[in-house]
Image 1 (tube, rainbow, N blue to C red):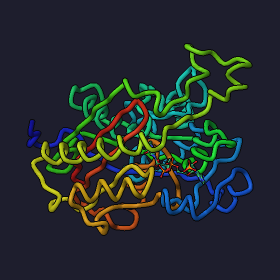
Image 2 (image 1 turned 60 degrees about the horizontal axis):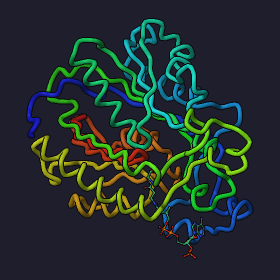
Image 3 (image 1 turned 135 degrees about the vertical axis):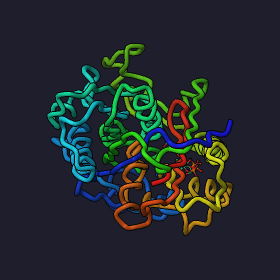
Length: 331
Ligand code: UT7
């Protein structure tokens, strides 16, 4: 299916928030049996940001959202919708999106959370496009915010060294010319959920003493299996999104992949025939911020001038679910 058509929605602006506190690999050596060399060579991560106790997922999303709105020249009253991706909601009821709405004073907006883990920002762009194309909204704020430090097991070296906290946001509006979302690819596979999950603490296994003892309310990951699935899925997503947009890797100015592991990023880039000079990487400074990784990278790339008006950007993500997705976007 080739989606060669004028875009229906475009990314007007972006914003990001990263907590100021930097935690280096060396600092983690005092928590678990790990070392800087292992973390750097296996993942590419050197440091990550960790939010203070009193900085929550909603606060980080609102901070990123305010920047994106200011850059788009819109006020909070001008938002029709707030879509929020998170694996770390401030609480289970009500949604973190409603908290963000309250923090921003976006009194005309409908707001909801959705849970597609690391692919969340790209799923959000697609939902924003659909709401705009159907006439339900004109201006949508897509937020992705993750306080991963609140759900990792700080005694488990196989996961705690990988993640970081942060948030990104984008204002999405109707496209008026050739700039915008040129193609979308989304896919899921729920049969592999147990390879990356938080088994306890939901309605299936409510939080109790046994859950706390087993530490099953924390993230569990079968790293090597997830690694292989991530490479396979991100390659499929990149290829399909480019085919649907009717473009090749030569046409793409910048690849902005999910930032889980430099080895996954390099494998995806190689398969997509993109030299690493055309790939945005910040996993070394932030670790894996789940769904916030792509919008933070996107915002940095815009600020650094690596994305200019007219640039063609390929974004590719993979995460728990499993879910995976890709977009080709003309900025
Ligand atoms: O964002 C959602 C998607 N997530 C991902 O895409 C993550 C995918 N997975 C990965 O990135 C990698 O699988 C990891 C970085 C998680 C692990 O790297 P790996 O090369 O697959 O290592 P491994 O799990 O096979 O472990 C190799 C060894 C093991 O020791 P033995 O059994 O060989 O003696 C681990 O126990 O490394 C050990 N190990 C560690 N050593 C030092 C695991 N974690 C650590 C650690 N420090 N933090």
